[in-house]
Structures are given as structure tokens and as C-alpha cells.
Length: 104
Image 1 (cartoon, rainbow, N blue to C red):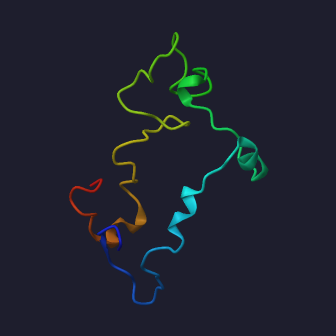
Image 2: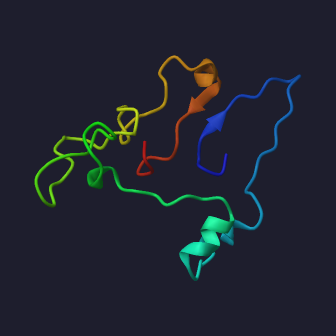
């Protein structure tokens, strides 16, 4: 795989391996907020700026940090580290993980 991972693929299965085209699509500059609104994308509010009821990072007095050892998702699950499910069905197809030095 492009990430350096080595995987098994079933002989009767189909797979496409390689890089996607037009990788610059995510570097598009939006001149104003209205452009994103026209695309249907609503404003993104940081979790720290929300109430504790609305987000695990919320609350605190003034400009406080997240107050935890690791960042959490909106649902309270960890957002850093090894977030892949250990019991995922396709784990047995991975022969070698990504290259050492890359997010092992």
C-alpha cells in the first residue's frame, strides 16, 4: 500500500491499489465564510469553546485547556493514539503495519 502497509487480498476479491488523483483538492482557499455556507458546510466550533454538556472539552473559567490527558471526540472516545478497533474483521489481512516512524 502507499502507506507502507503490507496486506493480503483474497484471490476472488477486487482491489484498487495506488494514490488518488487530484490530491490538491483539499488545499483550496475559500475567500469568505459564505463560500463554505453555500456548499452546505456549517461553522465548526471548537470543543473548548462549548459548554461541558455539549462537548467533553467544554467548560472551565476563561481560556482554559481541555483539562484531560488526551483529546476526545464529540462522543467522548479518544481522538489520538491507536484508535483502530482491535477486533476489526480485516485485521487478519494486515501482514505488516505502516513503516516505523510513521504513526505506528
